[in-house]
Image (cartoon, rainbow, N blue to C red; front, side, top):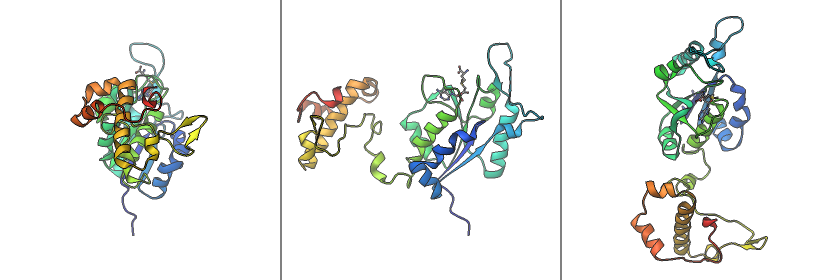
Length: 258
Ligand code: SAM
């Protein structure tokens, strides 16, 4: 009897498949792969490059520094993968792509097959984007040496939203960005550490007070650290009421305002 299809099927097209070795073995993602919930295949365009030297790059037309990944081996790798295992939603990693965020992670978690096309050197021949990319995605306004770490970021953010990957299904509900806010601060034992005590309300056992306090802290932290999120997601009626209700338990400067 064949094993059930994974809930998330990932294809990596990369010149450095070994970069993912420990990443794919560790922690929750490693367990999800062992349990068949997530499957990851790695394909190297170099295996599709012609000639004895299997050269995958060449100098840019028009001149300039560095080398560009030739389109042929990358196209052949993508086509071989899909001929064997079917069409995937193809994401090309590039600093000039759409900025990755939690909303995109949620969208991608709803798809069964994702392909990550990783560039290297000065990037990929533009025809790969034109012919193959369903989306071009960046993980931030900085330049990495290759798309592998960017792909790892996307895989981890997406995989943890797939049912069965996280131990506790509710863990993704209340966290940062889930409602355009940063998560409230959290503490665990001991109750006092190096002179700093846990806010009393969290020890009170009063769930309604705890929820109210957390809502306010989440809002304060977002206002202090990421005012852009408040601009994009204005205060809800409930949040306005929370703010107007004033500070709850403030034993010292709120951690969210530090
Ligand atoms: N010359 C390119 C430019 O200025 O946009 C940068 C190429 S970068 C050195 C090589 C590869 O790393 C890219 O093709 C892409 O796959 C990956 N990469 C670099 N920064 C990235 C980022 N912020 N997000 C996603 N991928 C990135």
